[in-house]
Structures are given as C-alpha cells and as structure tokens.
Image 1 (tube, helix red, strand yellow):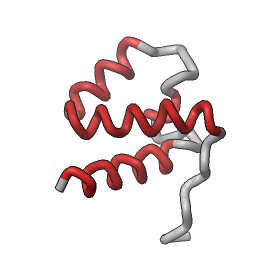
Image 2 (cartoon, helix red, strand yellow):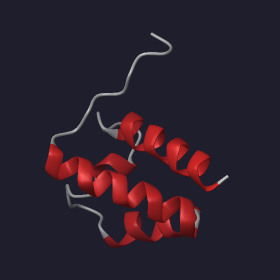
Image 3 (cartoon, helix red, strand yellow):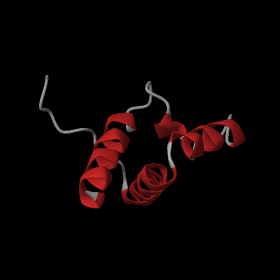
Length: 70
C-alpha cells in the first residue's frame, strides 16, 4: 500500500496535528518527547504514537513542514 494517502483526521484533530508537526520540526524531537511525557494518558496527542490511525498523517505533515523550511 505504498504511496497511499494517510487517514485524514477530523478538522479539530487536524488543527492540533498540523500545529504540533510544525512545532516539532521547528523545535526538534526533544519537543515531541516532552509532549509525549507530559500528556501520557490523554487522547489529545495520541497521534504521536505509531499505533494511532492519524500517526501517518502526522508524519506526512512533518515532511511537508520540513520541505517548507528548506
């Protein structure tokens, strides 16, 4: 299934994913780890985990954010 588009989150979650992806690209993987550590047990940032259905969309948005900064 290579090349398949990631599952698109609903608009409210998409806003959080998009903003988080931009901040992680800007501030580095340590920032992502701080979010994961401080938000354990909450669903708001569950897309940061590879088992989440929106994780692929998050990674896709990170790639786009990196491309935009180059």
